[in-house]
Amino acid sequence: MSKPVSRKAALKKKEEIAGYLFALPAILGLLIWTIGPMVASLGISLTDWQILSAAKWVGFDNYRTVITEDLFFKKSLLVTFYFAIGSVVFTMLASIVVALFMNYGVRGQAAFRTIFYLPTIVPIVASSMLWVWLFNPDFGLLNTVLKSVGLPTLMWIYDEATVIPSLILMSMWGCGSAALIILAGLQDVPKHLLEAVEIDGGNGWHKFRYVTIPMITPVIFFNLVMGLIGSLQAFAQAYVMTGGGPNNGTLFYVYLIYREAFQYNHFGYASALSWILFALIAALTAGVFKSSKAWVHYGGGK
Image (cartoon, rainbow, N blue to C red; front, side):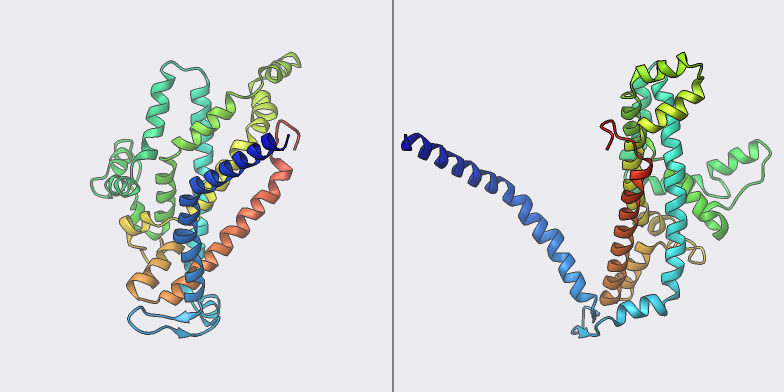
């Protein structure tokens, strides 16, 4: 009786070893390319290091300077939160509208899915160059359209007052991936619940407000978290399209980190900024997760 048991244990041991070997590349990648740089960045944030000179230990001075003295830090926070809130809200609304349109059963739905998803796979640098042309106040397409209908033209990304709304408009262009996720949620809404609303005399709005929206709150929650994290790390738009201007109007937080690290060689200071951003994103994400208990509906009731 002991031999089969022993053979089974040996086989299980071999499977465990094989599992660890298969997982080893991913574990090593995580340690070398993610955890390692994070630990190094934390150590660098406690120094004054300008890459060509030896690092000098300064403790928490970088963090104190960021929070109490750096005016660009406050400006970049305001700009980043302005963009993040506008981008998340309007992109989410656009995604829901597009998903409802595709869920309505229009002909050629597969083609529409492709069309709406295409902007998502365009590299951000390429799309930024395209939108620079669209926003051009002299010969851009948007001002041409405004002129053709008799409306005043705008300076778009060349005016501090309109630059962030312009970038929010640009971010809505990439609503396709979120729309497809919401569409999957819409197609899982139980038909019997919609029929129950009809039997009770409800109209289309009642079905949308009291059945559809609650049933797709898990996908809205997912898109909200991913959109918030992504928009708080916006960088390419400012780097390619505006250079942080006009008048630091697009000085996104990550652009400030880039500027401190790679233009001024303040690697210790930039690392401190990075860890503050990490803490902010972690706190906001935790807040969204905590609030989800009040508004996200799961089919299992949890």
